[in-house]
Length: 333
Image 1 (cartoon, rainbow, N blue to C red):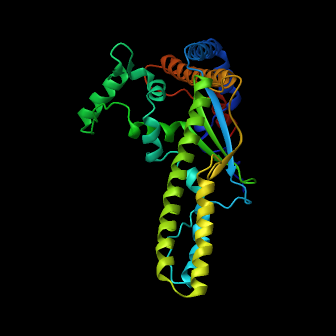
Image 2: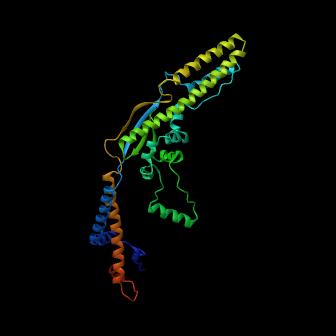
């Protein structure tokens, strides 16, 4: 009994010869080179007209444990106060945590927004020196975007002069908070095309946060002192009076520390300092990305051109040409 010869793979027409395909693509090398040259030119032009920015860094750490922080001491005293029937407000949030969370907060942005010189630099594109005020300056891209939004029924918000709300968005977008997982250090990073301003901005941000925490601490401590002083006039038991006097002494010490120039929650480890050279854009990455994009685009264009040429060379009758290897196999079988 004759045994049928093994049949070749079924979809022989669908098989792709990678070597042949690569040869056809390489045969169209002028297309690939042209795309890479065009992409390289676009990358060079983007670097030519790009806005180079510097990165300023400020490293802070919690205040030393040897210094009793006014905010953290309130939670410790509340346990002692409950023994003598005095209810002190608790503040379980660590001061350093409040410092980090306040970096992009609205109160901090509102206080920074009162510095007109700072606002002129941040929103320099909207500042009119002749009119001595901020003016609306809408570019063609923004105008087109607003028209598209209006056409789609999306809300288009009117322009408003720079204020605390807009500065808060700037803080969220441009101030980066990096926490060290191995050390109790937090790094604040800010990018700007003027390295001197970047350093001054981080100084102003740190000073504003510390000032707000200091005012909150003094307000809380003064309230505690007033409350304990009132309780001292009503408590008659000697042991309770002695406990209240001890708490008053502790609060007075906290008030004295909060009134000094020492940092309340975070002290500086290093900085703020700016990078010696611009950090963005990175020339090597831009050039390498442009060349890779040109190579990819050129390869796609070469494949498309080869496909289009094969269609033009195909018979007009619509009959698909049969590979010679397939015909030879049929003849042998």
